[in-house]
Every structure is written in C-alpha cells, then in structure tokens.
Amino acid sequence: MPRDRAPARKDGRPSGSGAASLTLRQLVNLSGVPASTVHHYRRLGLLPAPAYAGNGQRAYTNDHLRALRLIREMREQRSMPLAQVKALLPALMEGEQPPGPGLASLPGEPHDRLIEAAFRLFSEPRGYYSVTVAEIAAAAGVAKGSVYRHFPSKEALFTAVVENLCDDTARRFAQAVADLGGPEGLATDPAKTAVVFGRVIARAMPILLELGARAARGDFASQVLAARVLRILAEAAGRPLSDNPVPAGLRVIETAFATVLQWAVAPEWSPPEPPGK
Image (cartoon, rainbow, N blue to C red; front, side, top):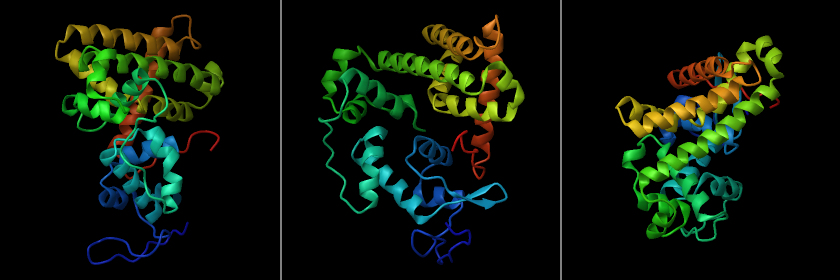
C-alpha cells in the first residue's frame, strides 16, 4: 500500500483507485463512521490493517472506504448483525450484490440472536433509549411480538445483554492473563498488558458506561447489577494475580479503561496491533 497521498479534488475527496492514501480523519469524514468504530471493525477482522505512514499514523485506502460504506448499508438498511456482514463482505467487495433484508435464515436460537442484536444496537452512539424493540427484532430476524416470548421488556433484554457481556468479558480477562504469561508476564511488559486488556474491555465499554450512568442516577437495580458486574470482572482479571483478587483486578480494569479513553480522545492514533499479528 503506497504511503503517498492521492491528489485531492476541490471538494476534498481523494481521487484515484483503491490504492489512494487516506488519513483516519479523512476516512471518518468520507464514510461517516466514527474512528472508534473503524478500530472496532479492524479488531473484528472486517477491515484489513492499514499501512504504517509514519508519525504514529496509518494510511487507509479507497478499499477501506468502500468496505465501510458496504458495512453501513448492510447494518442500517438491511439490519444485518456483524457476524453476517463479515461473512458477506468479501464477496461484496468483489462486486456481488448484497442479499435482501430478510433474516429468517440467520443461524442461532432467537433468544441468543436477540441478545446479540440488542448488544450491537445498544452499543451504537445513539444509545439504549433511542433503540426500539422493533429495531432489535428486525436485526435479530424475529417478529416484534416474538421478542416478548423471550424477554418481558426492553429493560429485561438490556439486563440479559449486560450479564452475557459480563460473562464473555470475564472469560476474555482470564484468557488474557494466561496469554500474557501470568503475573510475571504482566509485570514484565506493562505497556503490552495495557493494550491487551484495553482491547478486551473496549467491546464492553458502551454497555458498561450505560449501566454506570443508570447506577449514578440512583436506579437501585442498576446499582446492584453494576456492583455484581464489577466484582465478577475484577475477580476474573485478578484471580491469577493475587490471593485477594478484587483489588488486583480493579487495578487491571483501571488501566484498561484508561487505555481505551486514550484511544477515544486521540482519533488519529491507531492502537497497536494485538500480539501475534
């Protein structure tokens, strides 16, 4: 991927083919996709890693821009979950037409599909309160009335999303400690540890922030759930590190949150690639 930038047109858009070089800021402006979402798609394998352009920046191409536009179309106009988008995207990049909006053939049980769809929609910038049950049903490929067979309310579905995300993040925390070599590995390379745990917590951040905001507003049920979630995550991160896992795990979580916040306020800075890539 060349590092030289393609000449810009009068409207500021790059000209040329897929080899044109774009900064992250240009990619965000042209695609309408936030930088944090671009990084999220990269971590999921939806976008290839951009070339290193020097000075801590990455060089993206028109192919990245085209992929982001296709992803937006499939998610916003066809209500596809990211797992299905990832499966279809390579063929679409080769010029095939996207399928119609019907999702009746999606794999998985409706209960699980509803949790996945709700997690994705609740994690978007507009947040929990702007998402409707009808949108969740459409994204999961079920009828709106069927949602209430599995969850008595949208609030109950949010709780299920939080609990599912907590269990998944706890497993990822425990695996991250093992992958980093246990306590000695974490102590040997603090910068690498911060990146690894930052990547683990980044996926959960929008939901955890929503839960924290509810708890801060005095919602008792959210306060109880938030306390339980924090303890589970702290124990998962700290159990291999100490006989008293909660304080040790909280220190890991604090570092992970700080790392994600650094990524969020520095949109031109791309997080390092995960170990082994």
